[in-house]
Length: 445
Length: 68
Image (cartoon, rainbow over all chains, first blue to last red; front, top):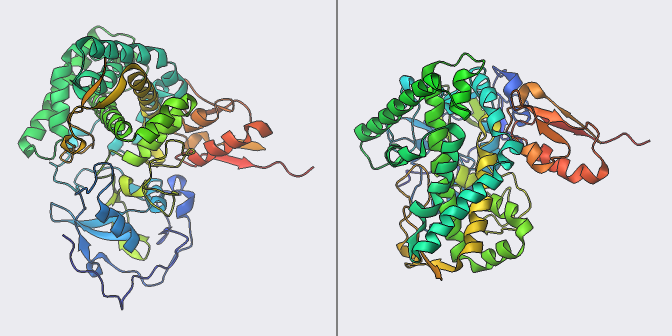
């Protein structure tokens, strides 16, 4: 898979090992540059990408809960890896925690990925897909939308949803118990809970879930054709455009209704993009993290015992599952807005840099025993929600949902076990967001 | 100890409120950080240090009291 490595006689120079991201000339936007990036300018040997051995992003996992082991090997070999993208372009891969965080907090790297390369085969993100999609924006455009949306996702506001989330989780658990074992937890529990919660928060009719679940699944699949992905994106856009129009006619108190009546200058295209992004991000990520977290705890009775016994430790367990499982399996990515030197390598303006969140979250240079699941681990600077200005808007909601849904599940179903051998659980190797396609379980009635 | 926040750079991830709810809040206007106190107690020290460490935009600054 990997092309030739540089000969041992020509090691890659590392001009400033303690300063992972060194400047080359003044930063274009010092106000948003991370403090870690403000090191001294360097003039020592800088190698261009042409000199580097090229790799493609490792995606094959040896164990369902661990990132591809080749990612770890690359992280051990060196901090910066030359990457070949499926579209033929060349760019870079960063795997170390410190570097991933530094670049995510560095204003010289753009989140605007129109025309950027993807490390796995995806149809291009088009300019018309972009309005309202704040994950692809830089300041000040991003700041405007983020500040408009953040009040709806504050920590206290999300924590205040806990009783509602608990009622939803309990209702789904009761339905599971009523129908009896065995059951697939994905369509009965792990998907509907976050889906219903985000529908209520946004003001999206939950009755439409079959349609938008299917569009989201198609849009996030790596095996559907480009045409199918585009068709799914377009269907979701049309759906959201009609919903925004309906909110304009008859606004309600939920987020989209509040935005259409609010004192802001949002266009319909932006409202549509915001709705699409929050609807998909709001259920796909949490649903998969929840199902994968449940599978992990079912197969790790020692950790499950700690989770159950030390109820005050549920928050820590959730953080550790986020770190350990890191479901954004192929990303995230940024594009250099100018030439930037990283560990002696010149990243050219316009090149795509892949920041491997799974690799960063298993970096032994940052985490003690990184490959061990330890649900009592003290709060860590994991990057499962990203870092910098784009750190997940819905992270506090995800935490509340994870804590409550896992607690209700393991409290409510005695002797919860897999209904098929663990190696028969279909893992989402083929999706942009990792997790399980199905989670067949059984329990004692 | 004293804690200060650069609200212009804050984007409201809410990590500070998660880790030190007695010291930090978020604005209803734009979700940015609001300091409930600029001088946390010794007992709040550990949670404030965690909050500072977790902030994704390095918005918070902590300074120890000068020795009296």
